[in-house]
Length: 134
View 1: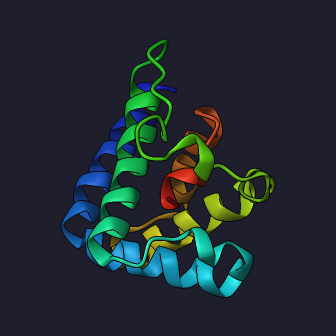
View 2: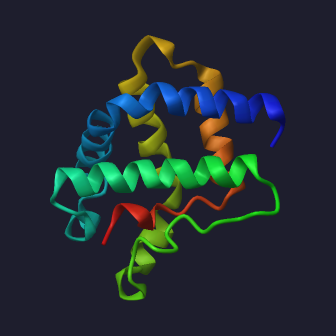
View 3: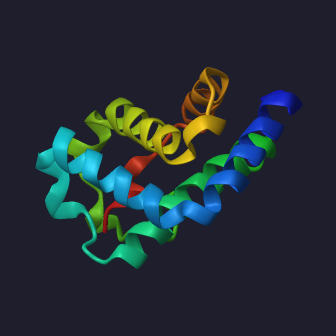
């Protein structure tokens, strides 16, 4: 990814980080509405939800900003038994949910360019939404 895109990702991440709890709640509410079949895999605890969403964003940002140094976003966050083919089939929907939740949480600072940047970053690193579950 080019340096300008990475910088926009970093700035938007820094802007959203103080509202991590709100972001996590928005993500999981949207998941419940749009993908109810995955609810049994979602953590109930608000702190766990916040940690998983922010871990996912951190790893996506790390992967986008450090070419050749790929860190799998769910490497240490899930047991192998927690992976499910149903999740694999929903990558695009979960990526969209995450970006929509980020936009809603960020409010007026969010732009179409940030939507494009984060969508590109998730595709670039092979976005792995399993981090939300476990």
